[in-house]
Image (cartoon, rainbow over all chains, first blue to last red; front, side, top):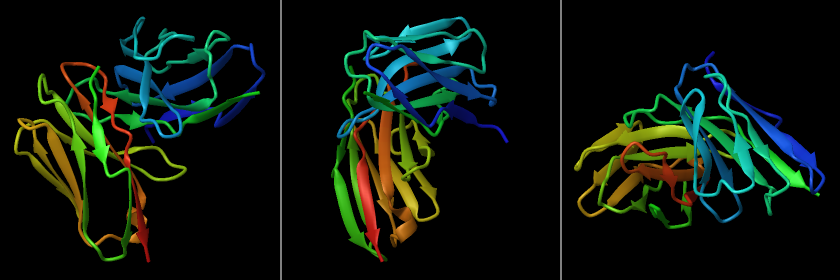
Length: 113
Length: 111
């Protein structure tokens, strides 16, 4: 079955460590996105990529980095520069056209201690 | 930055009641309006994508309308069931940009 896979589901890291969240899709979608959710907030866009080897900053990109070396994969690195990294992270993909909705992964809950 | 507002923030209804909630968005430079249902411990699931003023879409007991001139969309659920309990998200994009999401309406249907 086609879908989008995020791993791990839960992640615990010490303050000051970088951590990479995985996002893989086998839907042949061109566009991929990373959103962050905090309590009481809507989903906020971190980074997105509309084509391989290209990506754009979203509204809250500071302290994060991404790569898009393959169409299927869009990993997100949460660096030590991110002030409040504890959050729920959602990855999504789409055909990149306004007629189509996004397909979401099941999310990664990151806790920094 | 687009600002998408949803109301109410949360809603409790009895099984069998019909309900509706609102999504407000800037009407300028409108491109598309999306509705998603997000059940606890699952991924958000696309319900509707709407692009034209006056659009009405329906999926089973759930329907949605769109008014791009005044910048709002309504989501209706007829005869709510416990399995309808979820957070309903709306999102908009202007131009070929990523979706901007509202904070969602959390619906609880009490049996």
